[in-house]
Amino acid sequence: MIIFKRITNIQKWLQTARSGKAAVGFVPTMGALHEGHLSLLQQSKKQADISIVSIFINPAQFDNKADLEKYPSTVAKDIKLLEENGCDILFLPSESEIYPDEKSKRKHYDLGNLETVLEGKFRPGHFQGVCLVVERLLTIITPDVLFLGRKDFQQCLVIKRLISLMKYETDVIICPIAREQSGLAMSSRNQRLNEDEREIAAELFKALKEIKENRDHSQFSILKKNAIKKLELKGFKIDYLELAKEKDLQTVSELIPGQKLVILIAAFLQNVRLIDNIILSEY
Ligand code: AMP
Image 1 (cartoon, helix red, strand yellow):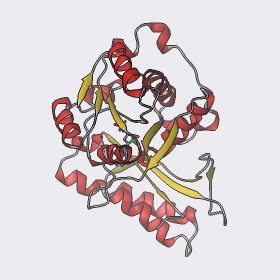
Image 2: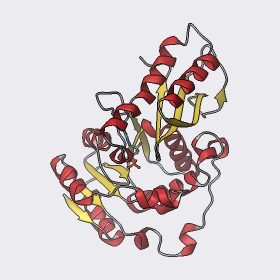
Image 3: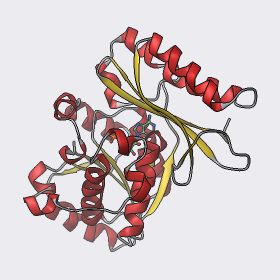
Image 4: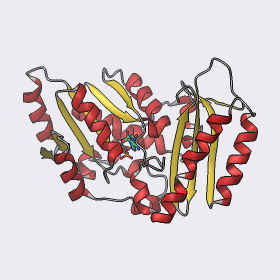
């Protein structure tokens, strides 16, 4: 695996590598890698000739300074994992490489409804920050295929919209959510939970599954109320638990026959914010 920290160096390398018409797959991450990230890399290895992973903790997407400060960083371990998993290139830029000046941080993207619902509502400015870094990374790497995790459902829609706004030709592949045996969606933030808390954190997915399993027997509004009550008793503080249309995340209050819907949740356990989702059409 080759590690590049400078834009000029990775671009020079890519120019030569590309002359053979190799397809480039790209997996952007914030590091503290786990099986979820590695499953994206595996998918890239299957579909592309060259697989690039980036690690960059993007300050622009943190609406909360304390969250940024507490975000785990395990670069040495990440490098080892990427090497063991056959990653070709690691792009590990510094903040000044990504944001060389103030002007590079002053952009605005028209994200429509995606900016104001769910994550957008609870983390103002978050998706603008995501777009800022993703646009920058896509401009540097110009991948043929971008691999994203469905764990961040809304982020996938935001990035697809960014790609269409920018008229990029990158294909987007959405990969399934990698979970612990308990059902807990893997996340770098899970590292901040102790063993007992991790066990409790798995209740989040159990609640989503329970709603899905009972959706034909009860109204969503009732299932939602019961789930929130149960989760709060276990110590969660719920930001939202919503039913929404898969295509644009417009929230709906009840199931709509024939519509593809997804249930999304965000909740704090202690001071760790967890998100998860479940697609209703999928068993
Ligand atoms: P992050 O490092 O959290 O910014 O995530 C980098 C990429 O990995 C994003 O596309 C995430 O959606 C994806 N990802 C994170 N956790 C998981 C997971 N449990 N399963 C699948 N993909 C994931």
